[in-house]
Image (cartoon, rainbow, N blue to C red; front, side, top):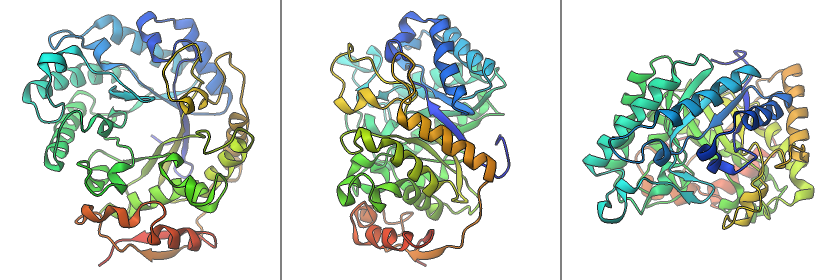
Amino acid sequence: MLLDPVLPRFGANYVPSAGWFYSWLDYDAAAVRRDLADLAALGLDHVRVFPIWPWIQPNRGIIRERAISDLLDTIDAAAEVGLSVAVDLIQGHLSSFDFLPSWVLTWHRASLFEDPVVRDGLTAYAEAVARAVATRPNVFAITLGNEVNNLWPDSTTTPEASTSWAQDLLVTVKKAAPDVLALHSVFDDAWYKPDHPFLPVDVVDLGELSTVHSWVFNGVSRVDGPLGPATLTHADYLVELAAATSTDPERPVWLQEIGVPGPDIPVDLQAEFTRRTVEAVVHNPALFGITWWSSHDIDRRLLDFPDREYDLGLFTVDHQRKPAADALAEVIAEIRSAGVQAQPATTLVSPVDLRTEPHRRAEIAPGSPFHLSWVAARAHSPVRIVLPA
């Protein structure tokens, strides 16, 4: 599924330029094709797309075929410009908003992760969408949802329940789409928060490769600023944590989200941050690919988003390339020309066994003594993390 057995993949998380994800409600095939042409022109090879769960399954007994047809058209549009596609199922959480169908809210309120009726409904949804998108040869991956752990604590769960939930849905997806990667995605509280009910082992044991999302507003940018070594290597740090925690030394790690959020990364530094972050992580032997968040900005006529969400795009809403887009295109071209090289690495032993001691996750979080030791060593060479014996 890689374009080359050595080179990582490069892509973008697709945020429609016109109407954000509300555009699924009034689908415009021509607008989608213009957006995807923008991305192909950067030299990207894939996009990650986000159908909205309650708009496909507004009632537990209804799967809207029109909505699935629109999703398939987006996938076909990507193929027309040479892009392969990863599909996320449960949205779920996007750009600070949660999208849940009414049949899990109000007097129906129930946990997405624990309630058997909700799980039955989700299984039907996942099966239908996975089976449909698997008919398209350019679909290479299906992720259960975008950072599904953001839906806790509104949907109560325990580590046991969240693991079981993901395991069951992954089985459903794999049966419906046997030739497509089935994946589980969480944001980094699963790595850093001691009481979080989604665990590091879920990232590295469930699904067919590991995914990490690197956002420097999680505290790492406060360690040393927008172009400090901790900030520029946070993506590599997360890839290393995932690689170290897996029992499979060959398991790939997909950097599924990374971007230039303000004010942590000021506008005039975003191009340099983009280039140097990619250069820091791209030679990691565990890396499967890098998928930028996001393709296009959010129109500021849409209200109530956190301010940082509006300007994360590689392109403006009127299709103008931004400095981060130029930097990303340049570094991708350089990497494809020169290739990636194995680099001599040192090792650093984690104080915590993330497989068995998740209650100690704070000890490896950004700004912790271990993290700062890793950053200092990383200034001289790549640093492989190993769990304690």
